[in-house]
Each structure stands twice: as structure tokens, then as C-alpha cells.
Length: 365
Image (cartoon, rainbow, N blue to C red):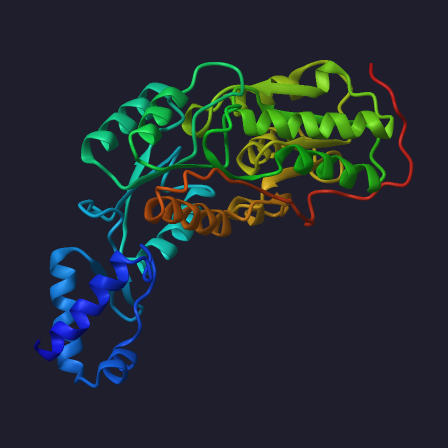
């Protein structure tokens, strides 16, 4: 055998005997040179040949990895990613976290945005199915009760395309999930404003997205435990996300109504909090002097403007990394068919949008 063939034969045999598993990193060039007493050129020739046949994948500056899943199965190295909006809010950080892991493993991210449209999301999934991607990471459009694309995602999973849900999930336990504990986040926001002396507290939330419904429910449940009565007029729900969000109109209606205002409002994300604060300013209501506001997600929006926003932190980058790591494990070990549920405990970042008050009259006109 030629010297490079010694290395090739050892790698192939190690893969066949599962001493090198799919996704494992091969020994370095130096280690292989020492192990077989060959030159670097021989090792590099062996790696080139193995890469050409699809057994390994070299990533510059990182190393060489085993690529084969099954005896006759090859990876496309493409991962489908589906989120609501790829270029704004928390989504760029989630994408960056995903790409950080994928780049090191020689995979590529195919970006798709559903714009919080169930039918568009379905068309994207059908297209990804046709392309034959190796896996899918998706923030699904789902309000917790109505229609969803869980059936199509289940079909993809059954046909061998691993799926990981990020930031939202279905009741069905068949998919791995990486999500924030949104109900707890809402509860922590409620406790925070309560401990700041507020007793008249409302909620401003998106009513057609499960994640934000959970945040609202967590806040109201905690306020009930604390003994705070929240009038219906202070529970303001609206539909839509991004450009289609009804939050601006809902905020205008809220401040235009002839009711006594709360001293604090908990919002289900930072964009919605910004709409609320802008509407308050138009109505001559000062934040935080007249109205304290808490957001959710700790996005870049939270630090825009004269009043920086107190917000529950969303670890977007870390969630992207975690979801991608789980997906790659599914890709490289399809025989395991495992399902995981990663729920992250939220933390709150205090800024200047919430004031401390000593006493407050409780009552609604």
C-alpha cells in the first residue's frame, strides 16, 4: 500500500466499525503523521481522497469531520432555517447563533422568512422538502390552539429530515424544542413592577401568538397571586407581527378610552412596548413618570430613545447555538430518534422605563 492509502484504510475501517462516529472530528494532521509514520503530504492526499468520496468534510482552521450517516447516504450540508423576519428584531442574533455552529461543521444555512403567515410558511417547507435539506430549524407560526404546519413538519421528520423548533412549539411532543420559559418571564416582569410599588398594572400583548399569550398568562397569574385585581380594560390584546401588527392602533385606542390608566404596563415584546410608549407620548403621558413600561426580549430597541426599556432578556444567540447543536446530533445519529426539550430560565434587565413609587391609590373609574 502507498503511504496515503494506510491513512485512508484506517479512516474507512474506523468509520465502518463505529470507532469514528458521524460528526466526530478526525485526529489532526500531526497526530496522523505520528501514528502512521508518514509525511503531511501523504495525510493530506488521504484526506482529499476521503473528502472526494464523501466520507469526511474538512473545515478550514477547524479540522476534518466524519460526514457519512449511513453506508450509502450523503449529506447536502444545507440546513433550512425558517423564522418570521430574517433581518430585524431578535432574529439576526438567532441566525448568527445557528450559523456560528454550522460554519464550524461545514454546513450552510438557507434563510427563509414566513412573515408570520401560515400559508407562506407551508410553501417554504414544501420547497425545503423538494431541495432535500439535511435538517430544519423553525420558529413555527402557531397561536397555541388553531391551525399549524405541524402535520407537514411531522411528515418531513418521518421521512428522515430532522426538525428542531425554536422559540415556539406545538402540544405534540414529537419535536425537539429550544424555548424560553415565557410564562415565567411574564411572571417575573409582574413581580418586578409589583416590587417597585405598583399596584395598578396592565398587560399589552399579541393575542394570536402562543409565546406572547404565555407571557400574558404568566403576568396575570403572578398578579393574581400577589392580590392585584386587573380590570379587563387594562388587558389589551391585538393581532399580527412586524408591519402587519395591530399594536399601534391598539395603543391609540387604549389611551383614547375614558378609563383610569394603570401605573405600569407589561408588554409581550419590545416592539410592542415601543408602540405603546410612542402612543403615550402623543397623548401627553410621560414614561416613566405617568406610566412605567416593561418589554420582553431585551432587543436593540430596548436601548433606543430617551427612555431605555426595562425588558426580560431573550438569549437569542445562545438559543440559535443550542438548537443547531441538537439538530446536528439528529443528523449524524438518525438511529437514536431522540426528542429533547430545552427550556431556558429568563432574566430581567432593569433600565429607566420603570419608576419606584411608595404609595398608590387602587381603583378604576
